[in-house]
Length: 591
Image: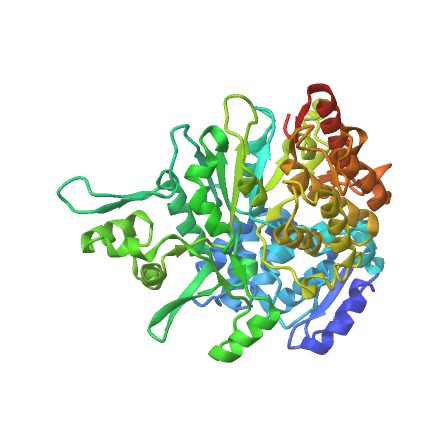
């Protein structure tokens, strides 16, 4: 379908006539029937401008008192402010001028342009103009290389993109919001987290770097504590981490309602909520199981209601929520009761909650404690050497472990001319996988292939310390739902990365520990060790990638039209681990 055919169908929604001219001129009418002309290149340049300057654009929109509650709901004066920002670019003066005089008709054309490129259904701009950041990014990424071909373009067939790229080209949703970046010192782990914050938000607002100290041994080192020293009474000493958690909640909460005497928060639209990146630098300089224990436990309580539960919640409470999220608290409500009025006032100030606009949020925190926000992503950078502490299986089971050198290698020949870039990542929106989440995954719409794959792996691990449980299956299914593979080769690439992040990091030990048990006892270590069994099984279970390359799901080529492929990661890692076992009598995932 061409853009002009798309506009013709969209005219049934708003009645606007948009007519294609030879070349790439676009004619459109206002409510009076007056005709205006804009060319497709100007529309493309305007979208690119919005993407690059979105913070400034949103600030201009936000400064108008009559604006709607979210940026994608059209309101004339606030949208004139958006077009006003574009006036500084000489190439956009025409759009900027027209946008301030014919605001609604031009916005309708631009909205159709975004919907066409992004694969959205067009709605009246008063309901959804698609001027939110994610929609704009998605549209920009699907711009044809030659805008004059717009009449014949079909973004849904463009460049063999996977569903992951088409649906979330601006970012990929993580299946879990806690991961470890392990690699040699100086490989760029901390810089990677910083780069992610730049891609999806603002360093000043959505990024917090916390260097872990070797003397951290309890949760108070991370989250703060009550001090009873001095004559002023008990005071809560706030940590940078707790302050950042509250900042993430400020991004989420639109307002707080009081029902049945208990405050409940109502969130902003998800398209408006940015990920907040907490980087725990050199995370294993201190024993992680000690200072991070409380945080780990609360991580597992994060939960979104699924579609069926959400409908029931709305019916029971007489509301219309688009999502409902809950989590246990990292700062319990009992903490507030231990402070006197002055202590509470000091704590509120330290958390940045001073002012009437935060009264509701403060009341909610006092009543329920401070839960973990769903838009908080915790990334720990770690070095695995004799100066650091190892990780227990409890930590590894609750994290995505990324061997940084394998997923984001330092390619010296590209030092001056980078050919690849990381894909932007964002927070998960599903906590427990179900068939509804998988129905739009072409390669595995019911999840059966994935369940069978992990069942086969687990049958080999049965009876060993490395056996998997429901948590692993849930996270693999979430990975499939987040990445949305279109074909078996890409589905197997998802499995391959999961093996590298969740299965192989758990396996370590000597020949006795890695021996395979059967009905007769212990088999010979060679070739019947667990690693050998896994290699043989995976060769059959992942035939599409075991002897050939596979798509890279976390990096993209910056060369237009080029797909980035890598060798099967788990095959190389298993071979390395087996060689280490045979040579040293002991092996582990980490160098």
